[in-house]
Length: 119
Length: 107
Image 1: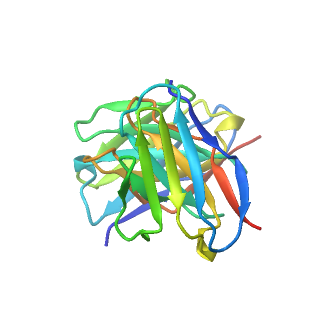
Image 2: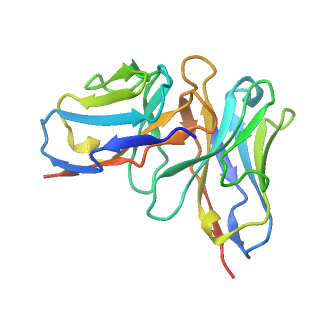
């Protein structure tokens, strides 16, 4: 079964760091565009970052320089390392698979993990 | 960055109605446009990719059209399970960007 399972969310103080994990099953992450998308409480979807099949990474301006997306081929897992966290980073974070063909449509999503940045 | 603007922000409709949602890009994105449906507390679901291609398993009452800067999502006959928020998203330029969403509510 094709599946993504996120973990690592929690309550963190402003300025702190957190690493989110997204474990994939049923497909190989390094063959796809793996993406993180977040949704603040009561708000819309915000694209955060992507790592493409070639390993290149791209970020939203709001997280550039603070977040790092990476992948571990041996664990078939994608990560989002978040540092210098701010209150406005509070959100549900989703991991999603972007299919290489077509328009990189994100066809598989995890259940989401909640990050709360608060003192 | 490319701005995606959806209209309307919300609408009320009845079961059986035809519903058309619009998404405009601030510059041309060719066909690199995806549509998602999201229900409260759930992850988004891909409905349409490449502007007009129906994702596997999605009912045929959903259709997409457009290219360049103007796109539409049409639901030909609204069903009870279709009441949700719909988002468009461009993947032509990074950073990828979403529209603000269109909420379809029961009249």
